[in-house]
Image 1 (tube, rainbow, N blue to C red):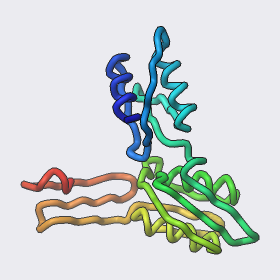
Image 2 (image 1 turned 30 degrees about the vertical axis):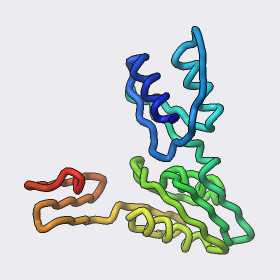
Image 3 (image 1 turned 30 degrees about the horizontal axis):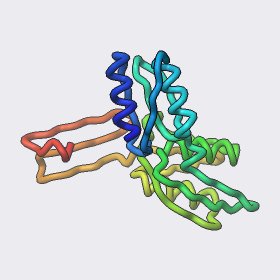
Image 4 (image 1 turned 90 degrees about the vertical axis):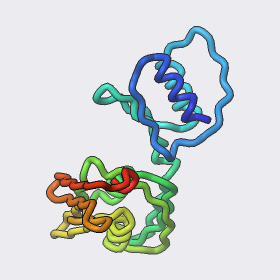
Length: 178
C-alpha cells in the first residue's frame, strides 16, 4: 500500500509526513543507495502526487489534475470531481474563469460530484453546500466562509467557527465526535 511505503520511508528518514486519504496505490519497488528525496520524487512522478514541504512536514496529495475535470462551453460548466480537496477545486475554477474567489487556506474538505451545464454561481453554490460553507457574492467577488455554527450531541459538544477562529467545548464526549 502506498500509504505504508510513504510512512515507512518517513520513519526511516526521521521526517514528518501527512498523506491525504485520497492518495491510493499499490507499490512494488526495490531500490538501493538512493536518498529519501529521490524515492519521494520517483513515487510522486509514478503515482501523480504533489509533494509540498512546509513547516517541517511533507504533505502528500494527489495531483489535482487527476481529480478534477472542468470544461466550459460559453457560460456553462461541465464538472467532474473525484475525491478532491475544496481548495484544489477552487484554485482550478479561479484559473479557468479568472474570477475572484476568496476561501480559507484550510479548505481541505473533499468533494466528489458530477455536474453538467451549470453556470458559475450555481457551481460555486453547490461546491459551498457540499463542503459545509456559506457562499457570499459581492459584485465580482465570491467568498467562501465556514458555516457559523455546528453543534452536536446533547449539550456535551459545542463547536463554533466564525471569522477564521474555532471555539470548542467538549464535556464527556466520545472523541470520534470531536
